[in-house]
Length: 576
Image (cartoon, rainbow, N blue to C red; front, side, top):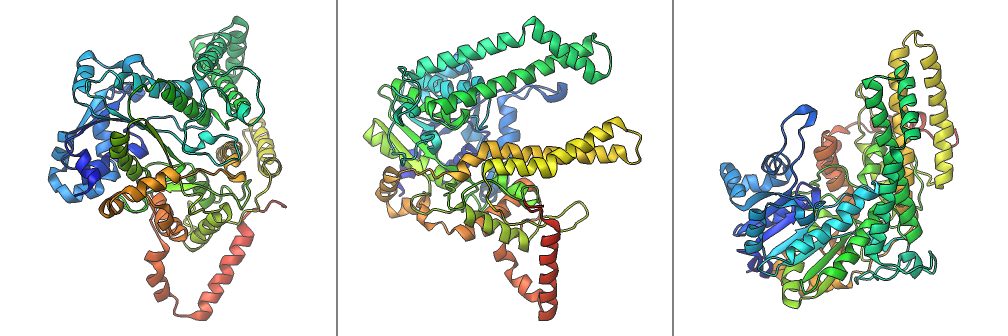
């Protein structure tokens, strides 16, 4: 009998973030390997109906966003028509919100959780790197503390598992150890810089939220509102006044407010030694847990860049674009012909099923040991993949199996030259943004030109594409230019402590990942199937058919020459 399965049998869990990628994989694994789990409560917010539609209750979101997910394909095969009944007997949606004190729970629901729950797993987070700082703090920093506070009131002292990120390492160049972050200094102070002021996570959070309130008040000042109204009137082509202008001015106020909050959050993060509002607020969340957990047995899981599954619930399972896919997807469509980076930089990818397995394997251990444990679920030290290797694997794949344009033509991808961020932005501006802006200016002043309306739509689309490239540069280039290392001593020891049966059932040994096979035969086909929703092709699937088609060597060589010419003709290069 598996010790992990044996421990989880008959247990009741509370899981947050259940509509997200990682938590879906976690719920699926528990239901599949521990069918005798007593119950899994899923904390889900009600959501306002879109376009005046009905409000989506937690139960309806459980049905639409979780049970209909492709993650349950294997379970549907196992249970057949009885899957829905099986799942509903074990999954219960609870109306709650991590951004509210007491999680916004109904007293009766809170009492039920208190008497039943033995394991709490927090997987909820906003993973937008440049989220506005007040929202990032509310969910990533204060959310875990609110959940912890509620968990400490439960009748059965629960085990508390919090999913953080390995990138709480921030701007440090030293490998991050599997230890708590200091709670009396910022990373900048640890590295010998930053403001020489006393640091306390709670005070830092309150100070930042105070500035956010000041910015919000500033957005409502009379002179600023008049400015928004004038701008709204100009954009509507009419005189100032009317309900339409008021509504448009309010949209402009929200846009200005968001820009200010995002900018302030990024400044705070970098001044304190982190990269962005995401890593800052996740680090602060960890610090508050360390300070307030009390006697609650606690695990903090720090995964690196979570990507598609290696094998479970199926190879390549994915739910939405993840970090690396934000670059792979536009690259596949010819929209990212180059990108800043150091080709020798380690891109620390980890399959989602490895993170799921590490979470579940850590639970019996923390139950036995107590205290607080940290685990890095990452590949960079034991089995690294470099940026150049990743890009070359993608280039090779899309050369063999190119994405298709609107008319069915193959889209060609080029090889990156890895410029500096400054050169990349300059190249994008001179080659694309400036000409497109000039053309758009011309079309707006001469709207009666033949084909102007269609051309204007095309120009708008292209501007969006290349503005997005600049956005990717500002957000991701730090992660493609610098190495970040995460010690995995605790995680390695955890895996070695498992029985042979549990190592097979809950595997997370990163040394067994074959990167070329994973990228080309698992991840990209999974990305195409589950997210891009195009035909899923892999090199393994197509070897036999490709060999069968090539019965004329001279024709194959000619076709290869045509392909190379198409690459040369269609792929932009930085020089011109």
